[in-house]
Length: 229
Length: 328
Image (cartoon, rainbow over all chains, first blue to last red; front, side, top):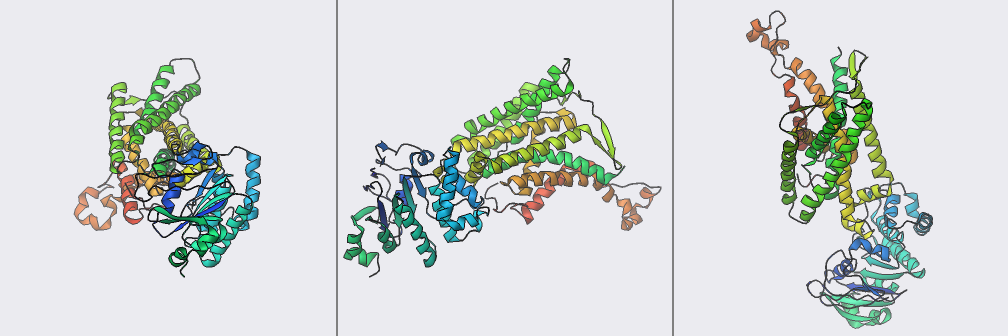
C-alpha cells in the first residue's frame, strides 16, 4: 500500500510526500500548527487539497469522504468526535454503518468489547457521560467496528491524564500487534516514537525529517525540539 | 357541559396535529440547522391534494373510509416529492452559503408555494366534503367526535412509528449521528446528502397526513392555511426544544392544550363583572348577570405565540433542548 500526498495550494501543508506500507505503524510528529491534522483531514477527504493521494493501487483524492470507510480507511478524529447523545452501543453500531454482514458485526462487537471492557459496562449509557479517556477508547473502538485496513489516529493523547494516555497507547499497541496498519499523528513525540517503527517530523507545513523511530529518538534535533532534552 | 374536559379533548386534537407538523421542522433543523419555513405550505398542499381526490371520489360508490384513505395516499407521496424537490432546488445549492441565505429562501419558497396553490385551487376556502358520518360520543360531561378520536390515534401512531424509526433502525441512528456531527458521520460512511433529503421527505410525508387531519377537523382547506398552522407548529418545536424529536411531540401537545384552555377560559377570566373591584364603575352593565368581556375566544391565536415569546425569553433552548439555538 502506498499513500502519497502532495499539496499545492494550501499554506497549511506545503507539498509533502510520504508513504505508509502495509502492517506498518508510522507516526507523524510535530508541534502544534505544523499541519499534522490538516494532513490527516485531507487524507480522509474532509478538507479539499491539491495533489495525489494513493491508497493501494487507486487514487482516492477525488472520492467523497463517506466512501472511504468502504475501502478500508478509518480516521479517529482529533478531539474524538464521538456522538455524545447516542449510546455507546449506538456509537459502535455507527462505526459499522457501511457494513451489511450482521454476523460479522456481532462478532466485532464482541472483539471491541473484549479489547475495551469499559465500553461493554457502559454500552447503554449516553456517550456524552463518559470520561475523556473512555471517549477516546470509544472513538478507537468505533473505528475498529468498520474493519479498516488502515487506521488514521489523530492526537489520541490529547486532553487526557497521563495514566489514561498510557492506557490508550496500550490499546494502540494491541491493535498494532494484530497487524493493523496505522498512521499516528501525535504531539507527544516520545510516546509516538515508542510505538512506531518509522516517523516523519513536520514543521510549518513541510516534512523536515524522515527516519526510523530509533534514529529519530537519537537525533539531536528531535531531542531538543520535541523530547525536551 | 364540562369546559375543562372539553377543552382538554379539543386541545389534544389540535395539539397532536401541531406535534406531527412540528416534527417536520425539528428534524430538518436537527440535521442542517435550517428552519424550513415552507413546511407549513407543504402541509397545506397535502390538505389541498387530499381535498381534490376526496371531492372527485365523493360521488362514487366507494365506501367513505376508502375515499378518505385514497385522499391520504395521494397527499403523502405528493408532499414527499415536494419536500424532496424543495431541498434539492432551494436549499442544497445554499448548503455552504451564509446562514441568512437559506432562511430567506425558505420564506421565498413559502410564498411561491402559497401562490401556486392559489393558482391551482383558487382564492376561496374549500369545504372539505363530510363524507364520513361524524359521530359524537359523550364522556364525563364532554363530547368527543369520531374525527377527533381518529386524529389523536393516527397522530400517536405516526409519532410512535417515527420514534421507532429514529431510535431503533440503522438509518435512524445515522440521522441522529448526522445531526450531531455531519463530518464524523461521513467518516462512518453516512452520505449526508441522503440523510438530509430523507429528513425533508419524512417530514413532508408526516405533514401531508397532518394537513388532511387539520382540513377534515375544521372542514375547510384554504391556500393560506399553512401559514398559521406552520407558525404554531414551529412554536411547538421551539417550545419542546428545536432539533429534539421528543420535544416536538411534547411541545405540540402542550401548545394545543395551552391554546384550547386559554381560549376556553379567557372570556370568563377577563369578564370584568366577575372582578369585584370593577363593580363600582361598571355597576349598571353588570346588573342582572351582565358581562363585560375584555378578550373573547377570537383571541385564540394569541396563546400559541404568547407561549413562543415566553419560551424565547425564559428558556430559549426549549423544554427538552440542550443547545441554545444559534440561529432563528
